[in-house]
Amino acid sequence: MIEAVLLWLVGIPPVPESMTFCGMQARLLPEARHAIQQYIIKLHEHQATLNAMVARAETLMPYIEEALLYIGVPEDLKYLAIQESRLNPHAVSRSQAVGYWQFKDFTAREVGLIINDTIDERKHLFRSSAGAAIYLSKQYYRHRNWLFAIIAYYEGGSGAIPYIDTAYREKNEICIHANTHWYALRAIAHKLVFEPLIQRRVYALRPIAYQGPPIPAWKLAQDYGLTPDQFLELNPWLRRPILPGTRPSTYYILQPAAVSERPQEPLKALFSPANFSAAYASVPANYRYDTGATDAAVQTSGSLTADLPLPPPSPKGTSTTSSVAAYLPIQKEPYLHQEWAYPPPTFNRRMERWNPFHTSGAPALIIHPRRAHIHIVQQRETLRDIAFHYRRSLDKLMSYNRITNPDSILPQGLRVLLREERPYDEKPVIYHWR
Image (cartoon, rainbow, N blue to C red):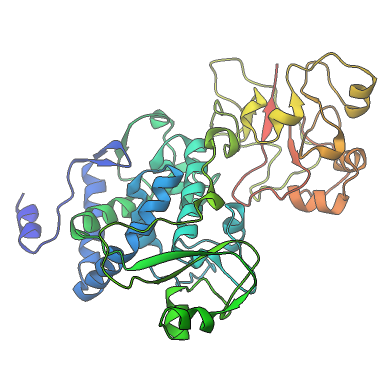
């Protein structure tokens, strides 16, 4: 009690026993409150730095909030941008994560951001925020809890599994304790610090859409009464002083006069919010975790070993024996619901040609193999067999799926990607069917 009074006297908010976070009722145990309080005190140590972050947030947060609202994620996630970069678009981590939301190159590309020698959308205010919202949505539909999605933002989708308490999946409540991941504790600390301090919104930036041939930055700056340096400072996502013509883009200028309503991002459709449960869930909704078990078919690196047996599916109501096993129906996967059928339809000659390895009762490919994006391994298949059947480059399939031995017999039910690389934060997914 005395400590809480002293903190209040110096203007540091005490950590409550319960609070609302990302729409959930969070209960904070004493050890967790102490850890959060220590970090809050650390944020208040340098008052000038804290005031600068608040002033920057008052200008930039309206555009971040717009992106999060558009994608459909909780507004409390906006504090992650402060936690990640202090809202500095030029921030670069030791692991080469860049921008407001500290995206690594491959993760940014996964969520639709463009990175080339001309632009880096990790530094674009709206687009990087929309990309972060998409990534967090993907992790939410994988782990079914926003706190776990926040942990996955730092650890990766599979890396977050050891920190997940399955009792709180699909629940509107969460218990924060001493073993809760430190990144989640800091996210809560940032909300407690900045929520009461960010009291106003300054709509200083005006987004303008452009689509056309490449145009020099100095020409646009001249049109709006800015110097080239001022224009590039407002648009740090430009790597070169030229606005490219590769796709429609939004650049920012200063508002000529104060406005009372936030200007709207004119090119939201480039990040159109999808049905995330269907389009971004890497495994079906009834995916089951068993964090204490290891998958014999998966090494810690996420690559596959050769000729290791796959355990049979567990009976209903019991946990799986594999941390990456997933149960059909396969309709929750992108592409799969268009390319595969389960239970399989009645076969004809054409279907038999499309399914040379088909096992009775297993899913069946229902489109021409040349149009397929994903393959489900069936009986005694190797990657070389799959590459030959789909007329794909064997080297590319080995790279996409991080398989080192193309002649090893793959685990039955393994998902093999045919046209794109498996995300770095995702272990191989293996389906079981009955």
